[in-house]
Length: 70
Image (cartoon, rainbow, N blue to C red; front, top):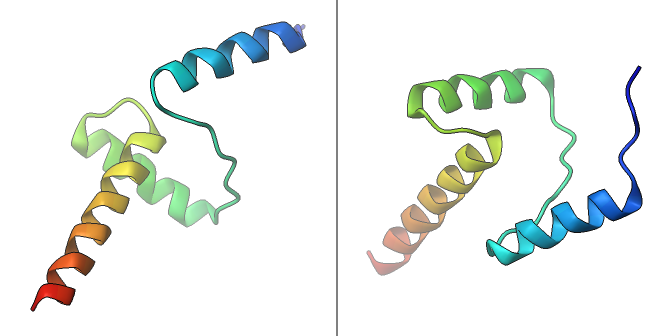
């Protein structure tokens, strides 16, 4: 039987995340996209899909900046 998280537990978790300079978001994505994120996560050796999303976001931002400067 799974015990639901208490409100206080969730509050403490979110506080720890904020202290790390991060926040949580909920994404609804196609299964294929999640599978791709998982493959990238394994190949990059990172712990979470969020790390992959952050990496890809930085890559796209840098590429966009390079295009603007060209």
